[in-house]
Each structure stands twice: as C-alpha cells, then as structure tokens.
Image 1 (cartoon, rainbow, N blue to C red):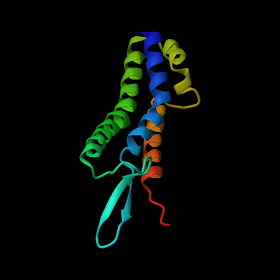
Image 2 (image 1 turned 90 degrees about the vertical axis):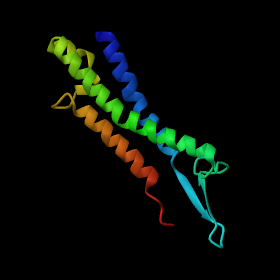
Image 3 (image 1 turned 180 degrees about the vertical axis):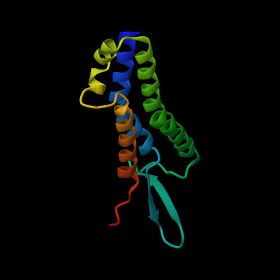
Length: 132
C-alpha cells in the first residue's frame, strides 16, 4: 500500500498539467470570417481540422468529459488516497510517502488545491482570446 500509493500520486501529480492541456486543446478553436455571414472554426493546434465537423464534435465532447474527469478527478482522487493512507498508517510513514507533496506546506491537502489552480491557469491561458 505504501509504495503503490506514493507511485500513483507521483504519476498523477506529474501528468496532471499535460492531461489538462491536452483536453483543453481539443476545445480551442479559432474562428474565421469568410464574408457574407459565412464563418468557420478551425482547431488552433491543427488548422486542417474543422471544429464544426461531426468527427471533431465527438472529440470536443470527449475533451469536455475528460476535462471534468481529470480536472476534478485527479485532485479529488489524490485527496481521497492521501486521506485514506493517513487513516491506515502512522503519521511518520505518511510523511515519508508523500514528502514531495507536503514538504513546505502547512496542510497536507494543499497540493490538491495547487492542482486545481493549475487547472484554472491552463484554461485561462488557452481560452482568453488575444484582442489583436
């Protein structure tokens, strides 16, 4: 339990920003005006992909679903895992297992809060449009 819990939390902690960014990029489309009321949207990452196509709509739905799963699920899962381990193991063992998360913080759950902040930062950076 000790080694497994530590490995899972480390992997999720390191993969979290990348997963959130990948999900957000599926939703990041740029709109082009072709005149006479005709507008089309293309994926910023690959302008060959039409955001209004039925194929990309499926990817957008999956992007939203996985954004919710990863964006909320990973911090919540880490919180539940750490709190579950805290109940089963002595405090000294828990501090050793999750030292990379709790070192420097006054509360053990603070890293979960930081993960939510990373989630918000990624979405703000991607979806705040440049006025130029």
